[in-house]
Amino acid sequence: MRYAFIEGKRGEWPISLLCELLGVSASGFHQWRQRKANQEPSKAGRRTMSSDALLAHIKAIHAEVKGEYGWPRMWKELVARGIRVGKERVRKLMAQHGIKARTKRRFKATTDSRHNLPVAPNLIARDFTPARPNEVWTTDITYIDTGEGWLYLAVMLDLFSRHVVGWSIAPRMTTSLVLDALRMAWFRRRPQAGLIVHSDRGSQYCSGNFQRALKAYGMRSSMSRKGDCWDNAPTESLWGSLKRARLHGKRFETREAAHGEVMDWLGFYNATRLHSTLGYVSPMQHERNWMAAQDKKSA
Image 1 (cartoon, rainbow, N blue to C red):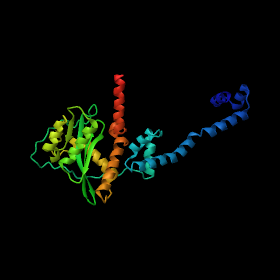
Image 2: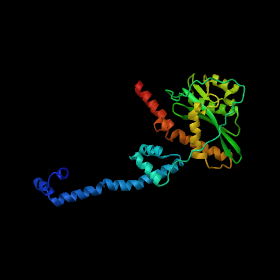
Image 3: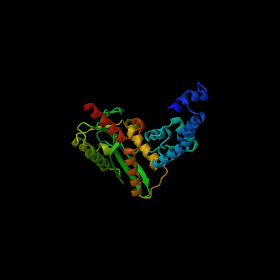
Image 4: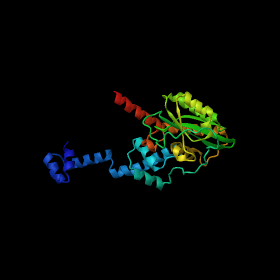
């Protein structure tokens, strides 16, 4: 188009001369530029408009994830939703408007290893990067305070994808609690024999009933060293995320209310929450990506 050619050359030659050479009027060229400007706002205009829009997106996501995301995860979430923005801009905008993740808090351990039951060796030795799903599950118990008393939660976490594949929640911290989580995980995943289940040295995991269940499923038991929470760091991290996002500062009048909040978060965690260890995708998406890659290799 003639007008487009003039636009490209206007820094090199006078516009009047270019218009004369191409047989168009200068007024027609300026009208064309004005129409184009109206259809495509300037970069400065887009940036001013998108700052307000960006803040709206950030606030919406912040509410959606119930204040769980700091700026790095917020930036990844925005990019995943197709919003092209720099991470430094997200950081500054969130700081300017006081939008931040919930603060961390220390919580006491629930492990009681004061028993004479047999203890399994540590088979994973802090290698938290299995090559595929259903090679290593980690498990642990945490507690939730309610107006009706304590509520205990046990999970089975697939170490490859950090997917919570089984869970159980009950008012007592018994062997049945961890057995129910194990049964759920087995029924949902049906792993091949040889899978490692890594836990602490708590009496629930060392009990004969739990160890017999592992053997019946063809699983191997692995346990952390005494008093070393870093040997089960991924599950400890899960507890920190749950309590920081949904439990800290809240008072649940009933166990049912706490149960509902925990179940809602587990669904969000598995399907939606961006995980930094996984390259900022959710556990379920990480598994889908892995399966797609395996299908591509075998095609």
